Length: 71
Image (cartoon, rainbow, N blue to C red; front, top):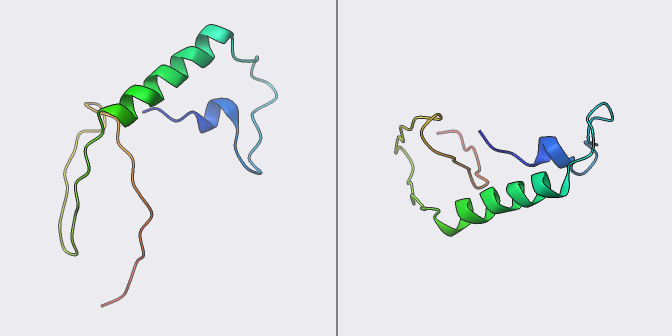
């Protein structure tokens, strides 16, 4: 799983002060992973009632916002 938020902090969630600062090489590596994930991303276009299965170990994934409606 990749999330730069845990490494850099975001919004009101500050970076853990017990962690050492990211090195320049580490920052470049996180940039590269994020760039490649966006470049080779695949949109699924799921509709209501669709089910998607995936292996979290096999690929990076993300999710756009959604609205949970009853009924």
